Image (tube, helix red, strand yellow):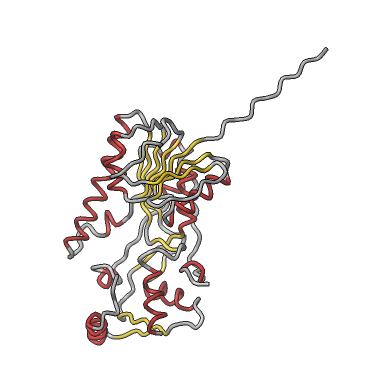
Length: 298
């Protein structure tokens, strides 16, 4: 009589995802589940569980006691500063940490606005805290630093421009708004996190994650507006006229939510090298081809 033993199916890897209901987190969550991971995810509001998915309601300052004792990877897709304060004393054991920060840690370091300089310092300090905690816990951490994020309709960059332009039918730029940009799609960031978790070359490293195309600010805005129906008009004004239009728009309350220093940075090159991320884990972001759905339209 011949005996046959059934092979044991491989164990599904287990992830803990913070910021899973946010723009990057939602895209990463979909990728992990599709790849067969079991996921515990955290949200401030109750959400329904799904196959291989368990939601926990809470926040870093009110962490639920139901988090798993051990996971294969922790992904932080929310505020880096809050994660960096929670992680050193986390009760969930984990060998691999992938956390999102921002290239604002460099671009806003010398900003004229004190709040933006403080943000840059907070991001840098938070990243250092995560690396130090990972080393102390015997884990390997990777920090991913995106540039200008788009694609979910929830960003405060291009989606804000789209909202302002649709409201008035026009968007005004200064003639010298020629600073270089590299907009990056949220799904490319999710793919980067998924790839980095399995890349030894990413252990203990921080990577800038720019988009796959470098273009000037005016071209980026023009291409964004052109994808809308009807397309708002892009009006380019000399500096003096633009300053007057900006003052009038502020007085009328039409620029609520515009980040401090945003106009100044239109003229600045904010460009980063994707080479290290490409070499470490095959990062290959798409060119900038906007569509209305990327800004929550349709």
